[in-house]
Amino acid sequence: MPSITEENYLKALLRLGNEPLAEGQVGTNELAAYLQVKPSSVHDMLKRLRNRGWINYQKYGKISLNESGRALAVGILRKHRLWETFLHDTLGFSWDEVHEVAEQLEHIQSAKLIDRLDFFLGYPKVDPHGDYIPDSDGHLEPLAAIPINQVETGEVVTLLAVKGNDPTYLQYLSHLEIRIGIEFKLIERVTFDGSLVIEYMGKRQTISRMTAEGLLVSRNT
Amino acid sequence: MPSITEENYLKALLRLGNEPLAEGQVGTNELAAYLQVKPSSVHDMLKRLRNRGWINYQKYGKISLNESGRALAVGILRKHRLWETFLHDTLGFSWDEVHEVAEQLEHIQSAKLIDRLDFFLGYPKVDPHGDYIPDSDGHLEPLAAIPINQVETGEVVTLLAVKGNDPTYLQYLSHLEIRIGIEFKLIERVTFDGSLVIEYMGKRQTISRMTAEGLLVSRNT
DNA sequence: TTTACTTGTTAGACCTGCCTAACTTTACTA
DNA sequence: TAGTAAAGTTAGGCAGGTCTAACAAGTAAA
Picture (cartoon, rainbow over the protein chains, first blue to last red):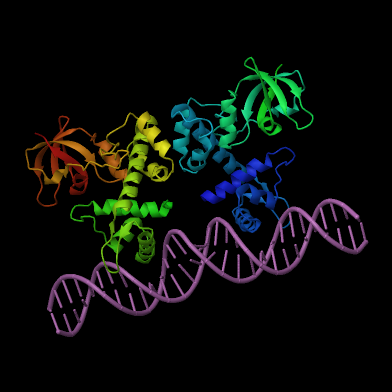
């Protein structure tokens, strides 16, 4: 059974490996920056994770999760997203508050707890940020969504999920009345700085490129 | 903020200090035995807890929590018992299963989580084992109960709480259909080994002294 | 009050997880 | 293709939390 720290490394590898273009491959410095530790600390841990049989890694090479490491990481993600759903739906936390607490709750070791929680919540498919919750067999549906700044002008799209855990970002979206499931029409793209003008709920709003990058939408059919 | 290990020491000091005759005073070896570590490890930690300002302790003396240490410990106990209640009442765990998982959940740091959980559960007064749950101000009602083997023959008493977290003990009680709130009549006391014959729910049952010691009852008026 | 036993303390060691500083390898660019 | 910048590794050290083995204090009984 992994320690809490080991779990956090596995989770980080899953996450960074899923970034576009990463293809499961992650670098030492990248991981260090993400986890806010020094590359030398990461290197120590990589040796441990390899000895424990959870990652593929060799000197000066890229890092990737193997089968069992991935299974562990997906299990943690499942716990994280179920807890987020519980905090939001049952206890009334706002969507910017759930991540921090779920970061702690995801490390609780009890299969029964998670199964019961899943049942209690009615087997939710997505968490408060729109991300898919892995099922108890470890299956995780890939999110078929693109950032809104990759959409053509004039298109109408639906917000499937938001990317990013920063509370101030999520609070800002709430402030703009942007929620999962809402429909946007892309009115205009500002070539200068990548800002977008979007229309939703009968109003027009300009959002920066940074804001737009976290809005994951699906093309409407 | 205490580490998880420090929290466990504080909790142990609260618990052992509340034992009859202890009067808040605990010994090093006693603490070591309870926490399943060596006395030398306890000694190291005691120095840390003293430096952190949570305990009264001097060389070769007894250990006790001070005001702030006690407040921390009661806070952890509150979390533990609220989580036990959640696991039992909301998720349907049996009373022998809740302790182990609550041992992990009690270390989650989020005041809001605990307050919301308390609200969600309807501000419960007691946990699944009959113990009082400290309120959000840190007040903990002392349990006015005595082990059933301190009761006179012929008396009728109510089970207020059970003492002990051993799952096999709690399962055994369930098997005997013994639950919080049930009424017992003490029929007979076996002087040889301290066994008791008790009557409840229209049946007679012999229980060993060990079993009896965990049954905390109040005299009926 | 001396002995014997229990209780508590100290020294030195180990593992986890992190650090800094110095080094090596790889990758890119001139 | 040589030189440099970026990425990755190594060595040595530190704090938390544990251990064993040896020692010191307190306590109780003869």
